[in-house]
Length: 189
Image (cartoon, rainbow, N blue to C red; front, side, top):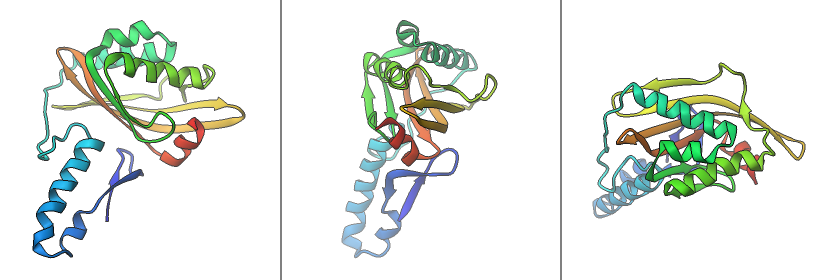
C-alpha cells in the first residue's frame, strides 16, 4: 500500500492508494484499480482530475500577496478580509478533525477559517511572528507555518502546509496538509 505523504513527510490519515496492489491482481482488475485510484486521488487531492491529469494554472509573485492578505485576515478573524481574497467558487480541503472534508464556495471556506479561530477561543496563532514561509512555483503557491493554540487545557502544535491554486488573481483551491493528522483531529474534536 502506498501512503500519501504530506508536504512535510508525515502520512496523511486515511489517504492511501492501492497502486502497488494492482501488480498483484489478475490483469482484468488492473484497469478498474487504476480508475478507482484516480477517482480517489481526485477526491483527496483536488488538483488532480478524475483522469489523473494535473490541472495547472500559472502562479505569479503577486499571488503571494493575496495569500498573505488571506492569512492575516484569518489570524485577525476578519471574515470580510478572507472573502475578499477568495474566488466565489473556492474550495478548501481539510484532512482531519471535525472540520475534515471539502469546504466548497467562498462562504464555506471563510466559515471554516473563522470557525477554526473561534473554536480555539481566539488562541490560534503562528508559533512566532516570522515562522511562516511562502514558496511560489510555476503552478502552485505553498504557505508553510507552525500554528499553536490552547483549547480546554489541550495544546495544539501543528506544522502545516497550505497548497494554493489561483484563478483571476483570487484563491480558487487549497489543500491543507498537517504534520500530525491524529493530533490535529484530537485537538479539533
